[in-house]
Length: 409
Image 1 (tube, helix red, strand yellow):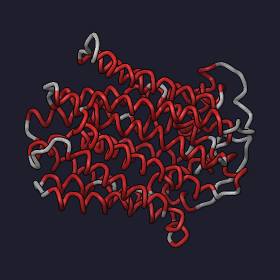
Image 2 (image 1 turned 90 degrees about the vertical axis):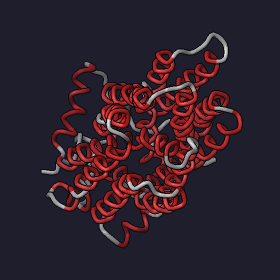
Image 3 (image 1 turned 45 degrees about the vertical axis):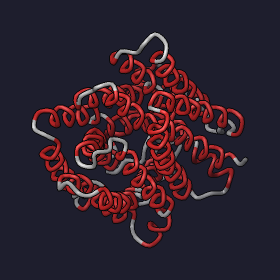
Image 4 (image 1 turned 135 degrees about the vertical axis):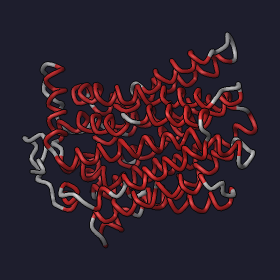
């Protein structure tokens, strides 16, 4: 198997594991009498360590190596997720124990994902594949994993229950680690030179601070990810209260993932016809707010499926564009550090989003929270249509390995 194909398949397996966790864990919490606030706590527990790992782990990844980090992250995920059904089925697993395992799972998740993305330029060069096409394939695979992982988990949970499905979830992480170990070679990029950890960490912060486009991306995605995480807490409650079938949220999420997978694979073609900025801005505008505003009206499940599919198609082009822009602007030895920091900044609002959504659902109801999130989402996603920094998406970045970043001015 060619290295790029192996990397994409491995990333798909790991992402499928994450998607399965996002479905099985909330259903397990609901099945054991959990509240909306507990759903928010569980969601935050899965996100906080990802933020921490993104901030502090990227520097380690640049030093240790991308391939090793990818393998280690998936091995840890396999062990901690397998521990959930093992403990729950033997000695018992209290809610706080579930939270701790989710925290442990997420600690190496962001560094592992950053490592796989950081390997792309060298793997693409070896296989003769354009970078934007490869980022589209990787993100399309990730979206496809959402479809397969969420749909399969929703179906299997209805048949077997949430806990047995987590064994399969753990197996996906193990499969990803094995595939990278056997089929993806070490990249030729030299590791970050030895030095004080805090100094190398500060270098990564300087890259993001000096680049106007990266700063704008972090701020925008910080807000939208918070809204998306809040929506992921509210959607199971909508499925339970409106459609009277808690597992239906898994099918709706799977449809969104299917649309996003197709959209990601078309990103390269779209950016050949229109500017990156236009594709990115329109995709963000159409992908987020319509979902929240629709759910606030109490729609039928059939209409929800159609709208979520369309929103997924729009969402698919976002990450390939961002991934290509980021890899083009950052020197090879800094990739994991910058990717981790950007991801951490983008994910930083997610714990607050999930907690506030769960708290708001318990206090004022699901519908008022959906209207609030939808309106805010709409306002925030107007930002890429204005501002000088966003225009840098369409300006070629200078490729200079001796610089940490191509500064936007």
